[in-house]
Length: 172
Image (cartoon, rainbow, N blue to C red; front, side, top):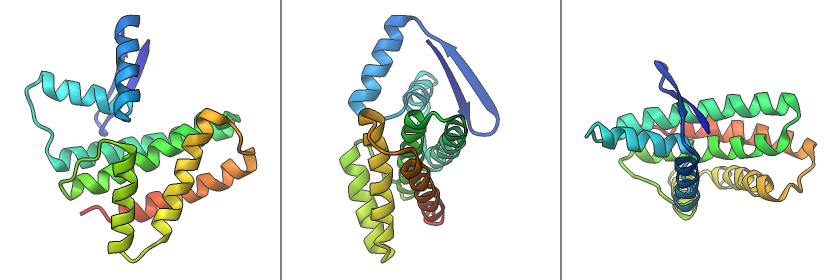
C-alpha cells in the first residue's frame, strides 16, 4: 500500500507499507472513523513524543479538508462519482473537526460530529449548517450504497462547498 499525505503546506509524504500494516491501519480507521491521514499524523506525533495542540490540529484539519475538496473536484471531473462522494464527506467531516479543534474540542465519532454541528448551528442560529452536513452524510452513505444519480452528486457537491465556507468562518 502506498499512502500519499500532504501535511500543511510544507511537506508531502508517501508511505509504502506492508500489507499487514495496511490492513491494521484500515481496520483502525474504520473503527475510529478517522482518515488514514489523521491516524498517521497522530502516530507521527506520538512517535516524536509531541502533543498536538488545538491550533496544530485545526491547521491540519483545514489542510485536509481543502485537499479532500480538491480531490473530490478532480474525481467529479473524471466521472468517478463514488470516490468523489467519500472525498466530499471527508472534507466536510474534517472541517467540522477543525472548528471543534479551534475551540479545544476533540471529535472522535460520527455521533459527535452530528452533535457538534447541531450545537454550532444553534449557537449561530443557522439551521442550514445541519441540513448541509446531512447532505454530506448522504454522500458518505452513497459511497457504500451507490444510489444517487450523478447530477444529484454534482448538486450536493455545491452544498458541501457552501458548508465548508460557512464552517471556515467559525474557526476561532
